[in-house]
Length: 124
Length: 124
Image 1 (cartoon, rainbow over the protein chains, first blue to last red):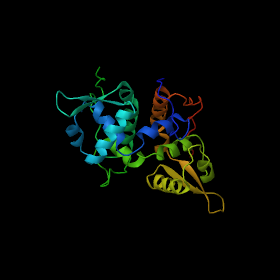
Image 2 (cartoon, each protein chain N blue to C red):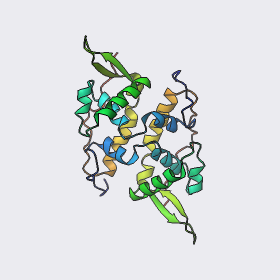
Image 3 (cartoon, one colour):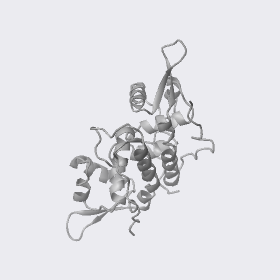
Image 4 (cartoon, rainbow over the protein chains, first blue to last red):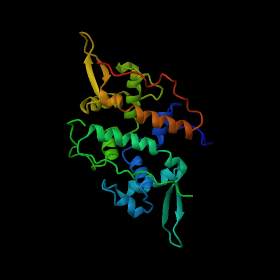
């Protein structure tokens, strides 16, 4: 267990509710999906097929950095960043795989994740 | 796989994105949690510690019914309903357990689900 305390903003001490305080919206888990799929640059997240709006992508990358799920690393001498998943983000893989399995079982025409999907490790 | 097709509203053919089209907000998975924990009546969902606003609860129960995750059964001769999870809702248990495990690992002071949690079966 990390030292990141359950905060005053948390809705309850339920671990599901607390997780959803960070992850519970239409986009955040898709950004995590892309991080675990190896994307690192703002432009790479923008190219995802769901077409995340630029302002929402900026907001989610910032919030995930503040929540300790992303490490934003300056890229060389530019003002840009590489967004790298932390161990806490990589630990969401079982949740994403469970959601993907449920999506495959309950909606026709969704693609099955390839065997390599989500197998990328965190970078140190 | 059900015959519930991937719809025109879906953002992509990714199973995670499609699942989040139904589940991706702060409240929906908490309603599913309560359903799998045995709650059936509107007043029971209202009493959850997160304090879901009444109008949001009404909206989510309606949307989950339309999405095939809840069966709304009239209660006796009253105008009220029992909200019963369908097999599709029960199939979200692995996702909820994965989220709970992540919440426990990453946030201090969240409670650990009891062994019996989420073990209730769908009713026929």
